[in-house]
Image: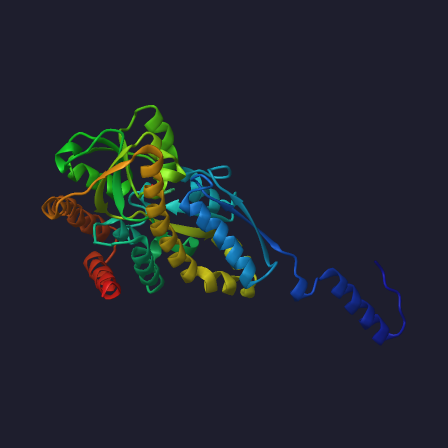
Length: 340
Ligand code: 3IO
């Protein structure tokens, strides 16, 4: 458009008007579209958390972002999640760190048997320790939430009465939890949670090493009528964003995302703790699901066997430049401070 005008002030005003008409004012800025990919099914706790995150963000800064959620691997699956987000196929993703052995040497400390009694506790310690460190392994992504599943139990298609019954038991697990399953005498098969329903159905595995929520959310109780309370480690998880997309967000939106980050992480831990109890009760009523509780002595024995993975982790983490023993001590101290 050519603006022909002889008097300067009018020309300036016209240019100003034109500029304003092309640039929407900040308060009515066009919403940013954020595509959020998740690997497990819509009813599972990481997806309940994803929906709640979107709702919380909209409460904090109404209309600033339109979050489109893609549960159940419809946009990205467990194994291509990180690459997919980094390449921009999704803006936000969710991973379970255990599916990427060796890729997260710092955060994998939370896969160890450190005595976390709940997802709430593990999530709080994980969140605060992560935020207090420069973590090299996440330098190419923007971490926006950190939480975990509840302590891991054995869900089984055959009765398990004692720790001896775990010998040769073919169990789905992942990452360090798979090493722990092996240390307990079982035969672990590593795969994402999202591949487990099919593996159970085909009889490729006899059970699952995970938290109780999936009894209901994946209907695992239908094939797994038995459980053993092992109180083994949690699976740590993160929500993360494409770094370029993050940097392009308005300061207000970045602020809002980080304002809800910690509260939402802890909420997710608390949700999966509570939901695991509901799911267990539901499985008992619906399928006659029965739990084996171990004696204190049996529990001690399992814990002792599981702890053999810690030294292995220290060696691997140190080889990747992590001050592993210091980190371990920091996590233990933070856990103890919370439990007090
Ligand atoms: C988990 C992962 C995806 C959906 C529901 C879930 N409940 C517990 C977990 C942790 C787990 O087993 C895993 O593989 O991350």
